[in-house]
Structure formats: C-alpha cells, structure tokens
Amino acid sequence: MQNLLDLDPAQLTAWFAARGEKPFRATQVLRWIHRFGEADFDAMTDIAKSLREKLKAEAVVVPPAIVSDKLSDDGTRKFLFDVGNGNAVETVFIPEDDRGTLCVSTQAGCALDCSFCSTGKQGFNRNLTVAEIIGQLWQVNKALGRDPKGERIISNVVLMGMGEPLANFENAVAALKLMLDDNCYGLSRRRVTVSTSGLVPVMDRLRDECPVALAVSLHAPNDILRDELVPINQKYPLSELMAACRRYLEKAPRDFVTFEYVMLDGVNDHDYDARELLSLTRHVPCKFNLIPFNPFPGSPYRRSRPERIRRFADILMGAGIVTTTRKTRGDDIDAACGQLAGQVLDKTRRTGRRTIMLEEDKS
Ligand code: SAH
Ligand code: SF4
Image 1 (cartoon, protein in one colour):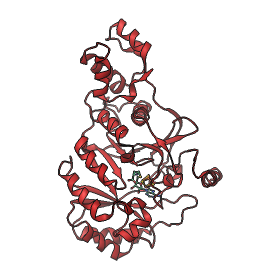
Image 2: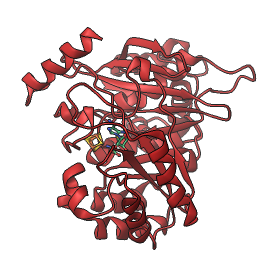
Image 3: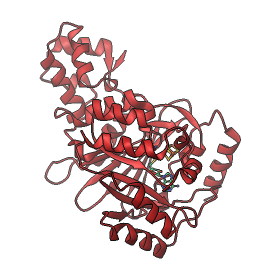
Image 4: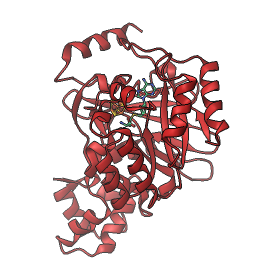
C-alpha cells in the first residue's frame, strides 16, 4: 500500500501516470488530501467511482497519530505524535497576533549532540518519513480548524522542532514542496523556515533545490566555543558557515539569514562575545534572534539574566543589526525551544534517557 502522504506533488503525478491517470487527477487528489484534509477516498466526490475503487485498493492516507495535545497558559499548544516503535515526536503551535506558527520535527532524536539541547541528549533514533513530517501539519491544521473568515490558522511553518532538517534532506524537501504547493498548503517561501546547525554542503543543496527562509543556529562567536557547544562546527567551521550563508542569500526568498543564539549564562553572553559576533557576521546580511536558554533536567547551563540579554541585544542593535529576543513560551508544558524531549526510546544512551524521563515524571 502506498501512503499518499509520502509523495510530493511531482511524485504523486508520476504515481498517477504510472497507472494511466492524467495529471489533473493527481491535482484533484492532492487538493482533497492537503487542502481539505480528507483521508477517505469515498469522500472525494468529484473523482470517478472506478478511480476511487482503484485508490482504495492500492493506497492509503495515513498521518502519524496524535497521542497527546497540551495547551499552555500562553496559548502555545504542544502535540505529541506517535511514530511507531515507542518513538514520539513533538510539534508546537505558537499563536501570535499577526500569524500562527507551527514548529515541526524532522527526526526522532538528533545525532548532532549540541551540548545545550535536550533532543540532542537523547541521541539519534531515526529520520521521519515525508508522511510523518507533513502529517504534523496535516493533523494540526485539522485540530485547529479554520478562523472566522474560513482561513487556515497556520500561516508559518518552521522546521525547528526535534532533529536536524538538513540531516534528513530528501524527506524534509519533499515536505517543504507540499507546504509551498498552491494545491496543498500554499505557504509562501518567506513564511517557511528551515533551521540548521550548519551542515554546509546541504545548505547549498537546499538553496538549489528548494530555497526557503533560513535560520542558522550560531550560538558562539568563535570556533573554540562553537566546537564545544555545536560539535558539527568541528567539521564545518565558522569561516565555511559564513561563506555558505552568503551563497545561500544569492537565491534565497529573503535577503537576510536569521542567526539563532541561545543565551547561556557566563558561557557565550559577554559583551565581548557580542562584539566578536559583529566582526564574524560583518559580511552576512542578518538578523539575530536571541533565545533565553531553556533548562531541562541534567543540563549544566543556566539562562542568562534578562538585563544581560538586553545589554547583549543593545550591542548588536547599536551596530544596526535587527535583534529580537524570543519570548519563552510554553514553559509550563515543556514546549519551549530545546525542551522537546518526546518519549524516544534511546537505543544508544538508554540509561541517560531513563533518568530524564524519571525526572520529567516527577514534575
Ligand atoms: N537542529 C536544528 C533545528 C532544531 S533546534 C538546529 O539546531 O537549528 C531549534 C533551535 O532551538 C536551535 O536554534 C537550537 O539551537 C535551539 N535550542 C536547542 N536547545 C535549546 C535550549 N535548551 N534552549 C534554547 N534553545 C535551544
Ligand atoms: Fe540537533 Fe538542533 Fe538539538 Fe543541535 S540544537 S542537537 S542540531 S536538534
């Protein structure tokens, strides 16, 4: 059985063609599935009965199942999805005045092991399939319903949940193509953001194959510190990362890169760190997004104080760089950045993972 949620628009057209069906049939089915959220072929009423029977015999539309749905006091809503074998991934909906953003996961766990990240501490389990990535958007769209004008509530998507999207490139790009397609979710490239810890060669591929807005997790102004916080830096150091950002901007839908910078008390939050960042990024049109560190059980770091974060932001802004500080939202339901722990059965570091789960259970 083919899960049609696993196919991007071109693949679905090819799948129909291989069965002697015209491209417009694929478009109709795409619309039913993604625009209207329909999983039942019998409900696709403008499709000939014979084709519906054929689809029922050969295909299914199966998103990952929602296993929990928690609403935070601030309106943030966290969904936990079952992805089989005891693995779960998290998706967070963040409502704001002018938009609704869905933060989507791309892997169960993550292999890159950044020192301040709860997902990284679980180790890597596996890549999500296309159906599991797009299925998060499919399911949450349905769960949220429509606004009073009949429009969808999710206007922006960020691949910033669990996992490194560029380490699951093919599947992430197929899901992005569905998000951008007018027959599906019709999101503009400027409203879809990939966040990467800096897989330099894959950033070039993304630029060539599916350019969308780019966020880069910087977190340190020099290689010595970044090697420690973001170990992938040992392979792709800052000089290469900055060059890759410049190459990306040649074809990007936005004319800046967003640098994400987690604020760790006494580690990367000094005035001199901010000044070093200015010199590091001087040739890259960019904005900064400062993320107050979100603690999780067993982490060695503390969040920088608000006045320190303000002073750090002032130095960047004083040099003309637009700098925002992320509101910590969803704290009460562990939905803040870097807290997405899921309930992944860790094959590599099971003892560590058990400890985390026990501590979570206590809270
Ligand atoms: N793997 C990708 C995307 C997922 S992480 C990446 O690293 O960019 C999304 C963002 O949350 C990244 O900027 C990441 O560095 C940040 N983050 C991870 N752990 C965090 C924590 N404990 N507190 C605050 N931000 C964190
Ligand atoms: Fe992976 Fe991103 Fe977490 Fe680093 S910050 S371990 S790349 S999910």
